[in-house]
Image (cartoon, rainbow, N blue to C red):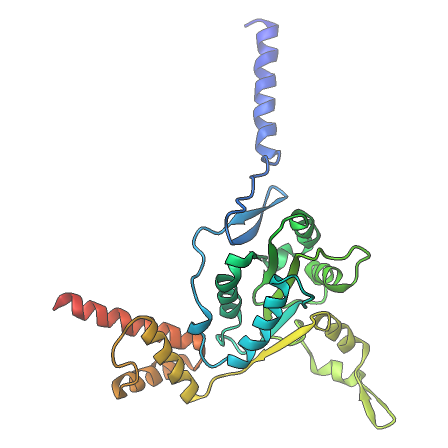
Length: 291
């Protein structure tokens, strides 16, 4: 083999290795979708269209009428081009926080609403996302599910900046909707209460607590979700069984089975009601298929 051929072969091997480490060309965003996920590959972030969007409706959500009214009003203002606020939905697990956002997407997608789901570790890319969608005609909700932070996480500061703390304002076509089990998005410790001071018979929280409160205060709308009592839980079960077109949704046998299901799981949440309804509906259809 000549020196020239050897040089070419080595060059091709070098290019092959470089191709493995260089970032791939960005994938074009499919703007026809109504929902997206922010995905990072080789350090490059892109919007990935969601192929199968959860088709839940507002009518499917039972027991949270007050919360629905508040969040839908804010979302309607946003879609209509009026001033609207970032929203923080907090409270017990399985009470419909994330389902409410999905239901609003399905209702208002024909009017231009879109959702971008963002994982906590990708919040540092929020400025890039805002820049990417700034000139789009649609209205985008940057959706962060089950959000909570430790004090030293980079996403914590990134979220604060985008919400209200940067010289560059967020674009008019995006809001942040976040769900969390923690009202202030960060763990709260007993020792922090010792920092509180008494001033003229008033209790003022210490600096650590104030710092934690400062993030949640940047959300203009707070909506709290609460655990369901037994009657509310059974109403949700009946709602989902009706959704699955199961007869006898409020019969005594369904009632007892649903309560036993909740007892085994230690919760009467909407998620548990949904899981029971799926199980009961599936069993009912299997019986009909055998007969």
